[in-house]
Amino acid sequence: MPTQDAAFVYFSLKSIYSFNDHHKALLEKATKDTRKKLRIAVSCPALASYRNAVDAVWEPLQELLSLIYVAQLKPAYETENPLLDATAVIIELCGYEIAVDDDYERIYVLEADKEAVHELNQKRISGPLPIQLVQTTAPLVDDTPDTPESESNTNARQFEQVAVGGTFDHLHAGHKILLTMTALIASKKLYCGITDDVMLAKKKHKELIASTEDRIQNVKEILRIIRKDIELCVVPITDAFGPTITEEKIEALVVSAETMTGGNAVNTERAKLGWAPVELRVIDVISPTKTSVHGQDITALKMSSTWIRNYIAEQQIK
Image 1 (cartoon, one colour):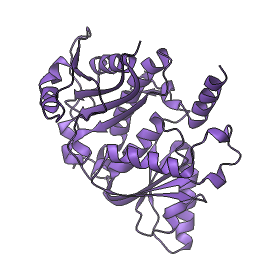
Image 2 (cartoon, one colour):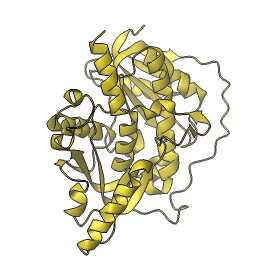
Image 3 (cartoon, helix red, strand yellow):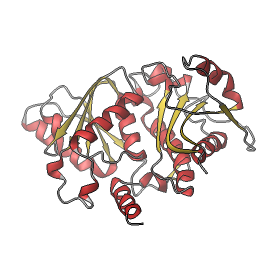
Image 4 (cartoon, one colour):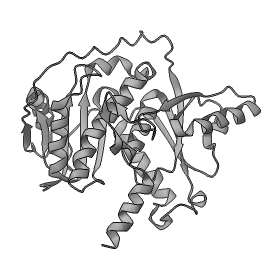
């Protein structure tokens, strides 16, 4: 049974490929002990050179995020707490100094990272939190490849202004992967179009959809956790294009595998304006047709806002 409302989890990775059973066990323990909120702070020093160059590690980074969220979601389902608000942040890419604030009641960490957590804990103005040292039985084997050099991907691009769009109702892991990758690939400004209420009249359980204003605020809050050193422009949209056809300087659009056609439509409209096309960057780890990430079942990531509204509606009539 959960023992606290909010907890902080910290772990470090040698490389972008180093997430393993020890980290899964850590996330499982923290998830099962927590009712409402989980902050997952991930340190991977090898990623420091990729700030503003995330396109070079686009696929492995989104796969890392998916593995982290899968490891958290599975125990959340098992404990019938699928709406636990968990957010992962990459320390080397977030643009601010991570702190354990007063929202949290306990810190979860592995033996290898206890010194780093001790330093974080000692910086708390209101005093240190209890530390839960999670012991694991899995053998410690690290034969994962190193994170590639940032210059090794010759096709990688740097983008100053990047866009993403969606309804973003009841933010879940799929949303957070999408927003994280968008925030990390932009070097200066992120545009996020939020589907306005007027376009959602036919949605199932419409009465459970948060207002446009609330959804905008929720997205802003998540983006500021993920990254703080870029400008945000989070706005309501009443068409399929939003800022991509009002802001010529947008260079890239982040889409899911299912919304690729929408990205192509954006470029058709931009061509009519005489503008350069946006580069499309695809998040495919949450595609319904993709069943694994490094052999890991990611069914849990396919939770949708519709599923959440159905779940809430069912809970209300129990």
